[in-house]
Amino acid sequence: MRTLVTGGAGFIGSNLVALLREEGHDVRVLDDLSSGWRENVPDGVHLVEADVCDADAVNEAARGVETIFHLAASVGNARSIEHPIHDARVNVLGTLNVLEAARRGGARRVVYSSSAGIFGELRTLPIREDHPAEPDTPYGASKLAAEKQCLAYAKLYPLDAICLRYFNVYGLNQRYDAYGNVIPIFARHILEGTPLTIFSDGEQTRDFVNVRDVARANLQAALTDGVSGAFNLGSGTRITINRLVEVMQEVSGIRAQVRYGSARAGDVRDSLADVRAAREKLGYEPGVRMEEGLAEYMAWARGAMGPAAAAR
Ligand SMILES: NC(=O)c1ccc[n+]([C@@H]2O[C@H](COP(=O)([O-])OP(=O)(O)OC[C@H]3O[C@@H](n4cnc5c(N)ncnc54)[C@H](O)[C@@H]3O)[C@@H](O)[C@H]2O)c1
Image 1: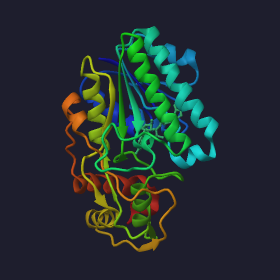
Image 2: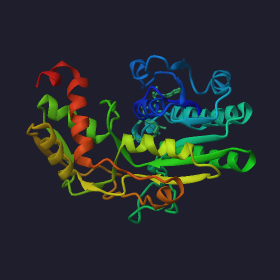
Image 3: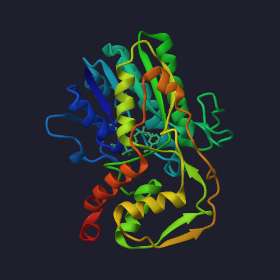
Image 4: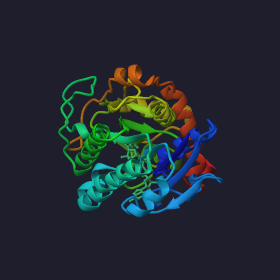
């Protein structure tokens, strides 16, 4: 299969590129390297260094491609609150550029990386696809708008569109950044020997899904004919933040300094994806256990998070 991965230099995109190559598919990457890394793109993969808002560049990159995996985005709630116009430009207009390029270039399928952020406040557990979608940040709203655009294109044109709504993804190539997710933040503190802060009592739960399962779900979606729709994509299990920190200590053999802070406004108490629809329609089967995924991640992070970390 000839594929284009937008955002292929990023965390999830680079894992997807690796899987596609392993399975013998032809891969091209379009990425502006704004949060991705050139070294995440393996030798032999053509990198188009361009903004997804540049329609000509996207059209050119999509030429002759059968499947577009669209991951390029301005990622995260906090970033979108600070930069709402940028968020909408990249996430909404960028997605329209990808859809137009798919339609014009004759691609058969777009697999779009959506987010559980489209739901806003979570009201029921586990979270099914028909949970109310009432995002409470510009990011959630832009990801939802992009989903709707994908699904509208699937109705209008001979194009399958599959939107995968990721819950909390973690794993190899996930770096620490200012807007980062909890696992890289905790990993950095554990490896550097600095105190980490758990907000609230730590008994809140999250559905963490390993990036290898997410990459596999993208591939399965691309290999499934005649299906369009939005699918929740988590591990289908949840753990408390306290237990997460325990496992991170166990697998790294390092004792963390743990502090507790007050709950953050807007943080949900519990999160858990219902993954039955993805299982039934896409053959999705999350297979990486948390202990295994965290052991792999901590070993990687030890090398990736600077000399202080590597020396421990
Ligand atoms: N990490 C998670 O837990 C999570 C959860 C839900 C959804 N997602 C979605 O998954 C996708 C990938 O996220 P990630 O976690 O790998 O983040 P990431 O920041 O590592 O990857 C995003 C990639 O897109 C590229 N990019 C950003 N703006 C661009 C632009 N204007 N033009 C071209 N490329 C651009 C970046 O350089 C980066 O390589 C995103 O669509 C995100 O919304 C991620």
